[in-house]
Length: 258
Image 1 (cartoon, rainbow, N blue to C red):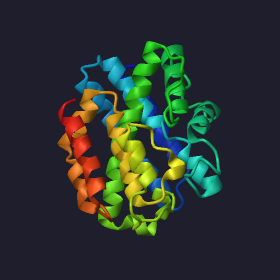
Image 2 (image 1 turned 180 degrees about the vertical axis):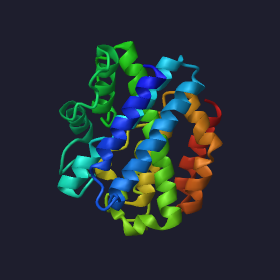
Image 3 (image 1 turned 90 degrees about the horizontal axis):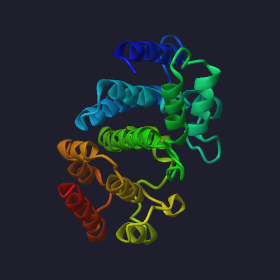
Image 4 (image 1 turned 90 degrees about the vertical axis):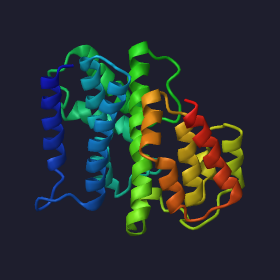
């Protein structure tokens, strides 16, 4: 994908999201997703650059970042929620939205198919069992870029106090509750965190630590370290226990050895 084509897609993205403005402004949750999307697109470029991908692949990675959460706009407008479970999977809806709105018109078949695939599967718990090397390359990158910004949103929303005004950000879980033994057990055994066992904000932090262990690219891990994400998390933890802090030490050691 050329830089010129990326500019075309960027304008289409802006034109589409502008349709959700009322009196020139987006509702707060749409604004949150717009800002998230722009940061994810920038992080996708940064990760790809850090891995020394050729420019056409860097541009393609940024385009995936730009469209990865396009479904959040119609999803929130219809359901007033970003919770996929009781509404609709936003990866699948993103695929449908890109097709329905013709946002990829004029894109060559291979990059078009890759963008659609990456958008559809970026939020799934596990990668599809059958992937081409190119699909896996970009799907892993968008999952890394998305998680990097979720780390930032989690920290910033607590640090600023916005999380209390918008509990939707953390799906209305208990902010001040202790970490759950089930979640800590899963993390200590290097297992995927079962969302059904999460009950508190502390659990949410453990989930995000587990995501750091699952980052696919060294440049993604370097960005976590460069941004001081672990220290920022510890600064805003609503509750601190020895066992929880040991999880942070485990993750710090993992990232340092990556």
